[in-house]
Length: 481
Image (cartoon, rainbow, N blue to C red; front, side, top):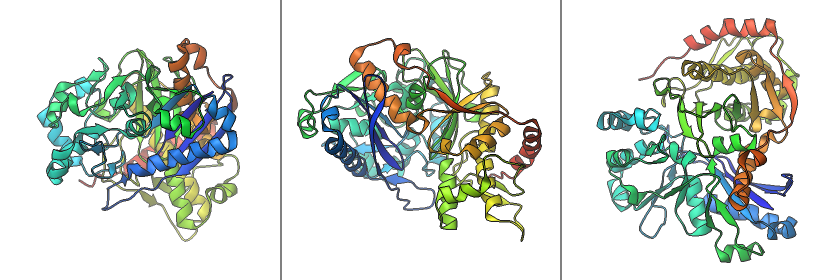
């Protein structure tokens, strides 16, 4: 038996996976975000621990025998968050999250201070990444910066609590702007540019490698007969890639979670930082992931549900199974700023084209289309780096909506595949990494492709209509700075 634990933004999800790669049980607990000021996004790391422990306690109650047999644990997690710990390894402040936009000015300072940043990290400095956040803390909270002894990404903090060791994997570390992505090692120059050194960083391992073991007292708490191995794990999107077997060039997938992304594994680095394409190490050795990322995806639908005071299912039901034509309303999904291609943390969302005749369905459809158009921007940015997307699987909570997947197929003009287990992609990928760390099996043997249970083909009439709308949608973007 193996555990996959996904520390997401809105919830912690833990799954039990057996030797035949069947999900035996699943538990999740919600997380909350605080926003002390506009553009700020923070979480208390204590929440992560309480939620994770609650999922494991629940699994012990419902599947005690299976949990007792766990041999390996894999972790995946939201990327980029800055968890600052003191000399006693206690958090000094709430974690500054991936969708926090406060460090825009520090990005410009960082690139001026270290001109080789894009060449070494494969990325441009963006406010969501970890390194600019440390420059912000150094300027605005100098006493906290001075007390910082260790900087951990969210899942590394969780692993610290689970094991007592500070360890990170190369995929998650790629989103910090402190990693030399070609060498898959910390860059001393990058760290120095933010006033840090390797002493402030966790030890690095590959995602499928054994990293440490679960603390003996926690193994006893959950009735485990041995101390399970904890794998290096992965950032959420690389873990999602492992979960759906996207481990070779030529594969691509869309993530429709709180945020969104269009991702493609590569055997060589194909960076395009000028258009805000992300270059990350994959969770398996010798591979990388190129990604176009948008800061709000399924969270846009959640926003609309709150606005109308109904559930997401109630919003989607009147739309039917597929669009008949583009909505007369346009939506910019920049509720928390945007990354690819604009790198604009202060831009905000927009509804355009409203009239007295506009109904709820038109607005909801526009929300889904706006996310799809943003992913089309990602597609084009990846194409500029030589990565052409010809089809894509979809993971994340948004994959539940057939209407949304039909919109995606027509906006991107490629077949879109709904896959078995797509909603548990990151947690399932983490479970696979936990297994690989224990067994040392061939990666391709474990990381197989899931069954495609439904394919959404582009419709010529709709693809033409959406292609005609896309330029006008892009014209709605106006930088605020």
